[in-house]
Length: 198
Image: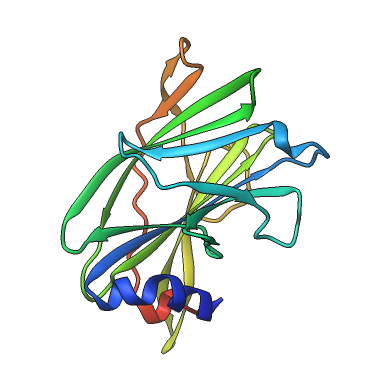
């Protein structure tokens, strides 16, 4: 994975850009995965093309990966941003069955990346059958001189066994769009490039 991260992000990070890596997946354990509608946008920003694939060993997870010319990202959907600017946007995710029924989910996100910590990740896992989701973002944690990973998790699961998880509840329900929007702000954790590659 380290080599893929360097290949996909290294040049832009070296040239002074920041990057948020979106790692989105939907658990959809059915033979016909072509009927799955699973897409996202960052506010009104038009995103570059992406592709559904299976980046995880469990093929029941459908993942979204950025298309980069003839290549497809092996780490998710990297979005490059300027450093030292605070970015606020609404992450909109649509998931459901094509030409039948989908739900739109809206989440406010704030990120600020710096020269010291120019990258962050935001993972999203949606369980289609249970209609549950969780976001996660990793960060560096030092314990007795050892640097390791910890993460923050945001979820809509009322009952869970996830330590320190933040439970998200709907703020607004837009029935005309079958949409749910939340007030809880997602704040992915900035990391050093070296730690991000671990």
